[in-house]
Amino acid sequence: MVETLNLRDGIGMTSARTRGRMVERLREQGIKDETVLAAMGSVPRHLFVDQALQSRAYEDTALPIGFAQTISNPYIVARMVELARHGEKGQGRALGRVLEIGLGCGYQAAVLSKLAREVVSMERIAALVGKTRARLRELRVNNVKPKHGDGMHGAKDFAPFDAIVIAAAFAEVPRELLPQLADGGRLVMPLGHATQTLCVVERQGDQFVESLLEGVKFVPLLPGVA
Ligand code: SAH
Image (cartoon, rainbow, N blue to C red; front, side):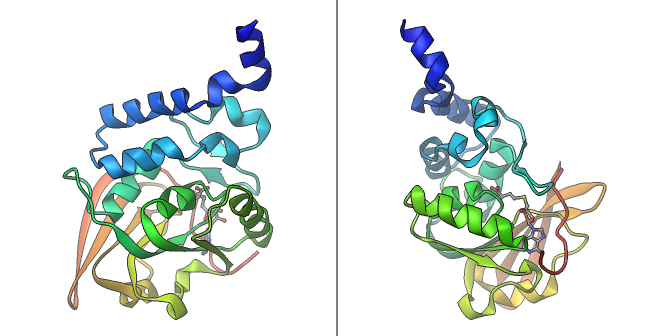
């Protein structure tokens, strides 16, 4: 009886327990920052995808979110957020204002909202901004500001940012973004086209120190708005 109920409601596949298993897997995959793991454990990923995909929301896989875009797999979201927090050694720093480029369905923004005072998130597809703004409101994620615009130029009016996280790949670090980084802040993005590498740029005064990490696969960062 209980089993039948679970199957009908999808509870078995979308519960806190399922999320707990996802967190254990993230730990095994090398995520060390406990604050990031706790945030990943508390955001209901299944509520960010279409109902038909909800049962797959906690698998380590990318999922379609419409408009030919995808939500990244949980590992890469955790990894990018951990890097933004300087959390690779286990304990990252709390973030003030963060800029996300590529709001998409709002999942990564919701994770960031647990770790930052405020998240400004840019999205070039107007229809996605509207849909995601409504979703975030419904889920009472109040410290994410979705903005319609080309994130390539950043968001000067809100700068400086403690972290900039780009959820789409580009051949180079968009130059306009670097001056919008606070001292000690970090920009995290997939660099490249066909072959992409995770890239971190850390601001140290007037210096920008770039590190290249593992290979990744993201949708492209596109110019202009849609
Ligand atoms: N962080 C998202 C993943 C979105 S996929 C999530 O958790 O769902 C990448 C997103 O970047 C897409 O929605 C795409 O439309 C957007 N994007 C691509 N180029 C952009 C640009 N120049 N400015 C803003 N958003 C952009």
